[in-house]
Length: 89
Image (cartoon, rainbow, N blue to C red; front, side):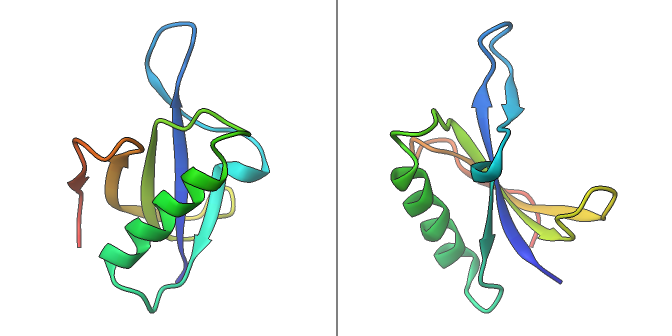
């Protein structure tokens, strides 16, 4: 079972949130860490990518990253630190 972050951004066409595309849209996480530390790792990666992509949010997922694999969203938050909320633990 793997843990990873999926980054999201606001679409320019209609202002809705959409998953980012490309190699930087998914970031693997260490499943031995707590959810709090996974969130900190995700925010650190957003900070590293600030010059590459405009990231507005993220989802911490548990499951398979490959297409067609089953995944569960554990946590959903925004890149700016306000409005974060836990989905499932």
